[in-house]
Length: 188
Image (cartoon, rainbow, N blue to C red; front, top):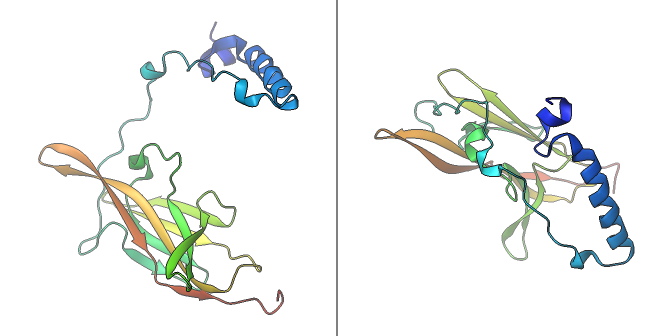
């Protein structure tokens, strides 16, 4: 039957019962400190045969005399706008990020990541424009307790272009100007 579970989960109408059974076993293993002894379990059936109803994203365009990742706008509110490709061209983003907020470590002369797009303090806005050109705006809402120092915002992505007669996906990255964050007068 194509009820909710049958149509919306890959395991069918008995998904909830299966999850309850597995979570009871997991809870028992956690309580008895035997998690490492648990088997990994089967992969979802027919995973290779799943399909998407979304059509392929079109090729990406960019303004004349610019490159993907170029900064278009920076503001006092730590808002940076980049020339961007469609985020759908970045594929599997597990263990990756579209955004980093980095602080400069003067002792080692390196940049340390303090936030990614998974942080509550960052926002990632993709705006599809005309002529297949799009922008990404990254906002960082600075906590009053943020460490004083020199920061930058970086954006990572992929764009699709036509090379010969073949679509090719290319990686790009962009980096904002360095800006300074100072301790708040009220939170010292």
